[in-house]
Image (cartoon, rainbow, N blue to C red; front, side, top):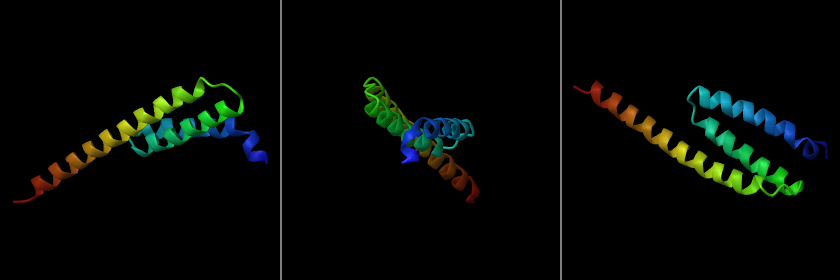
Length: 87
């Protein structure tokens, strides 16, 4: 299958997309980055470059932490904004 032979190009596109989204302060960028880290781990397994796997698993943990932190911060901002609207 052609798609599986060009995972590096897919990873490149996901890297660019996640960087743009995070730069725009969108938590979805961390989700895209996590998917990319899974893909890089897959590439590492297929090419026997085992160092990619623990590094990217660590990155996924950091991405999950950042998603949680950004979502909680967004909820706090929405709650504060809502409470200032009430008389």
